[in-house]
Image 1 (cartoon, rainbow, N blue to C red):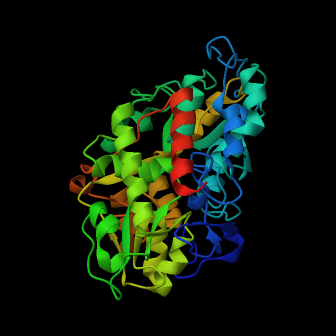
Image 2 (cartoon, helix red, strand yellow):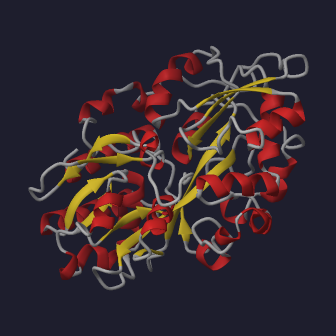
Length: 416
């Protein structure tokens, strides 16, 4: 989300505390849209307590629906309307006559009521859970949610299947690494909006290259000047890799080994804090030397400071997406499918990627970027090559019992 390169626009950032370890003082810093992206998936940061585990999110008895039964007549033909919920600042400026949204409206005649009201996956879930669990409308036709939340809603039967003929661009143009997700292997219910990588960032002016997550956890010269992410799935995916397990499919014993290893690292004093993307300020200032990091954040930092480097660690990279999904009882599904198909046109996808600076999920957009901003064409954090993408992994979908247990383990180690 880099509209103003080299500048973090204050209207895009909120305040959020970080969970400090080893007696470090707490702090407050900026939080981007990505910093909120998977909030609720972890309970380790300030303002969220173990009590969060008692929220309805972790108990879904009686909430299951059948999306083929819980549906309504599609009014798209007579009502050229579309209601969208997305994350803040996750689209190019909508009011410009040449914006992707404006062009979509002009081309299709569909009037878009666009809401940037997905500030947190769990918070959004809480707003819509009672209605979706009871087969009642939420007055939305399309919403963008992160992999794990999209998977959860699909598993509960709250999401409508998409007509593959109406989203043919998705099936034709989705990049290969985002296909065959465990929770929706054939794209029946979702289409990625934007994607990103989780890896390592370091300040090359302050320390030597860091090649692996293992180094991040053990190198003596980094002790006390390393941060890890407060999102459980991000950090624990790497911990699973460190102990030789596969984040895409792991056992309870492997989880136990990984969480025990994290406890050892925390006890050693290696980790300064578990943070959202507050780490960006400390990394740029040299307060920390290295950290677990999100690709979009690093792109923004590099505009101001080329010494900030993003590394694909030897253990690989975590690849995540925010996904377009249609909730049950949406009244304008065909219009939503027009939107989805439109954003999978390579030219449109490139225009969007030039603004948000996350991984573009659309094949062919890189070539179109040559016409829009050639400086971004070779940026591996927007258009990663096949060799980089081969190193990526996902985090195994969790059931309710695993979610409760693993979040509890995570909170115990990180001090949530």
